[in-house]
Image (cartoon, rainbow, N blue to C red):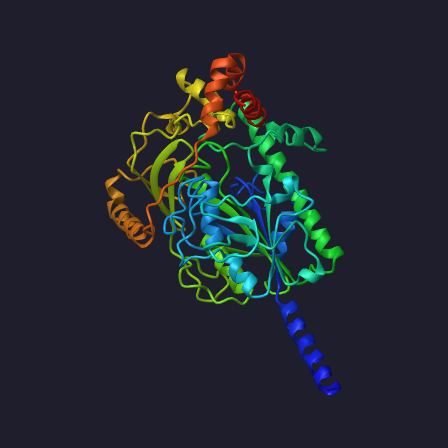
Length: 490
């Protein structure tokens, strides 16, 4: 009997040892960020921790989201499947609708493989617990997709007994918020607006420069947060066997960015840090979709990739992706329909509602885009050049075609140039093929009402002085005004 118990204990020790050999995985998801880091060449910002991640890890230069709005993008990543296929493409919709039974969140498979799944972190702004996906779910608990809808096991803390663990941590600082001024005021070295370099489709205005500087202040803030997470890993003796992945959940919240299918909306940073396994200092030019990151996490964990996942592990020798297919549908009160594909050289966009302008005066964005307000005024005064005025025209092109290598800012639309007719035809056909492949499994449509519409109308009517400040490029505090409006209604 003693011999049996000894053998059993040895076997249990071997099993536990094997489990601990599986790498821990931390997925850092910065909100609303394009390639605006020092290690990607962004002037005026200092990101030493992310620089180190890139120097000792693998930096990807061509990673793209499948939707430029947070909840559809996050839905695709949480399942590993393009959001249009799973009918999770409409922002803040179907929150009461279970996923089609063929799909599961990727954390289900991680749990099945013995991982402790963790949401958030005790030390970051707001604790980093954002999920924001367009299907029925609960933050914590078990998942069967019918009566149980839990995505993670626990909140905020990773300990040795959790190994192997997966932690998804949201870095909210770079999201538009009422904290931007506070972060800048508390910074020991706030970014100098004179040092920023604006894209050519922005007007060079002091308010716009200051707004961009504030955005870079937030990036420096979250770089410090990432440094704190690395220190915790070191202090707890878990750094060596932990993969750290850094991305943005969609592009920056500004002109041609979040909510649009141009490069600033779709193109995000991706850095994978795991010196134990991957040679540092690599810069990869592969075209990568964010669903590929989901597939890669499962691959790191030793999980066979489910057939429904549209991503592919990016560290497999045979990995190759020619295009990322992206879509833009509902965002708050704005029902859009645009489709795009991006390769390492070409971007094609099809706007199915060309009569709807880019600048559609969406309520939520009115509170958070000083550059838009300033440039509207400049356009009315005839002070914008062609590149700057593009975003403010009364309609959109039916089709857009850009050569990303010669025209990275997407200023020259080649869709109506006969020289590029064959490329246009090819990409048009490829987009339709993707559309067919990603056809939704259902047409259930349960959108939420956008309260920002009510708040904006209330501000216009009851706080005209504040509204005037907004039009002059001042962020007047959406969160506090929303609370005041809600309190009045109740």
